[in-house]
Length: 90
Image 1: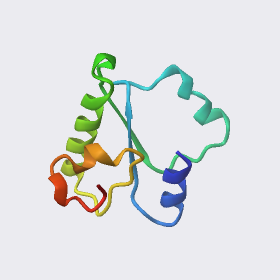
Image 2: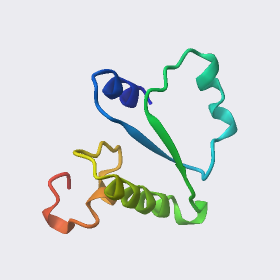
Image 3: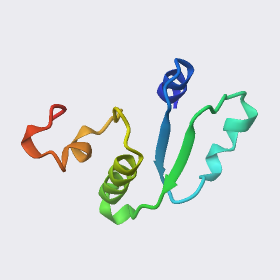
Image 4: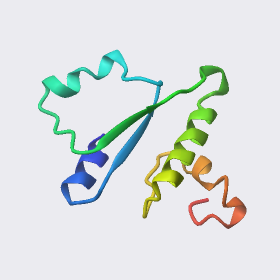
C-alpha cells in the first residue's frame, strides 16, 4: 500500500487489486490512521483452495481491461502467463 501511495503522490494513476471479494474487516484502520487513499482499491473474489492462482488470474484480467502502462507486482509469474517465455519480467 505504501508503494501505491508513493506512486499516486508523484502523479501516477494507481489501482490496487486485493483478494477477498469485499473489503476485509481489518482494513478499517485505513480511515482512522490518516492514510491518504488517493488510489482505487478493488476487491476480487478468490478461492483459498486454489492458493490464490485464481486471484492472480482475475487481477491480470482486470489489469488488462484497465490497460495500464505498467504493472507493478510482487508476484511476476501470473503477469507473465499470457506472454510465455518471452516475458521480460520472467
